[in-house]
Image (tube, rainbow, N blue to C red):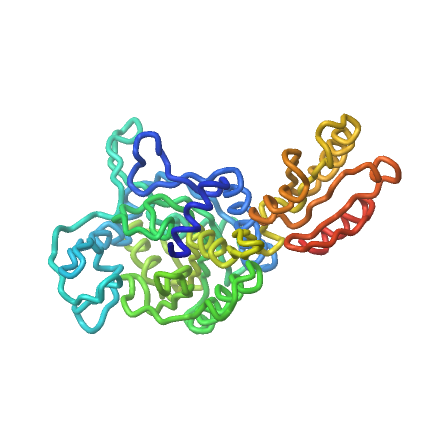
Length: 427
């Protein structure tokens, strides 16, 4: 069984990710995030926001509505460019979207599964989901394939009303929708997902420098903030440019199925703002010039998958497989697991509840009282919990906690305040 298959079963078993509408056989490659998945996903979003927004003075946040006026997509040629060819590989008979195939040269492609170079066109598919009869006027619009057009159409608001100092960036974490053909590899390619997007408005002289720096920033975020090994990451120029871009670099991760795109960065020039200026009749200029735009777009679900894939480790102990999820402490779903030594002792359980109540006001904590302590240690290692604290009879005497760090065999005793300080340092 390959690692991706193991990870998919692990995610379902532990409550990270599982198939949506499963009791009815699932629905078109949709996935639900369980209790642990929600915690991990939110922690990744917090780290991204901190890195690209909070720690910069030239970036502001934005949360646009999912439903937008259809003219936004028509003006920017998004609709015309959302049509993609669906091909059938004549080698392994799997269906592939042409934009997802590796280009050899010109119009020649290679199947990533069987390396066949012969394909037959099946049909054209629209990657945008159409919404009919929306609102009192009954207009036809679309589920957004990205948040960038909402940002572009509000450029004047940021520039002239809010007077955000130029050059500036606008960051969003939108849920978006694309009519992707199911290709496997778990949640790597899905039809409903979240993005971590930053669009940066600057003048033409700055754009190349900003866009190139964004490639390194996107790479460094994955390595430094999420703990991904740099040897498993690379920056690759995109050979099939989207219609709006002058150049694109992809940050890729080395999965068991090959290198997969996690993030795109690049230079859009003034393509979108120019089109919106023509279509709306409103000036999209700063100091007389239409700004150029650099972008960063991490696929959150792919970042989530990569982070779990990187952290998942198996160890053989006494002929048994033990799983440890070596997540970076800052993004681990739970920082601390509170474990009463014996759940049948009322005083131990009450003391454990008291400790839980205090810690849970500061960071994410779980309470685990079933089975013996050693088994609970292993269970918490499996889900990436950073620290386990045991409330035992010594705790009742002097207030100290038996504290164990993920994956380690030794324990140390410390007071609650000492534990809080240590978690703050580690996480």
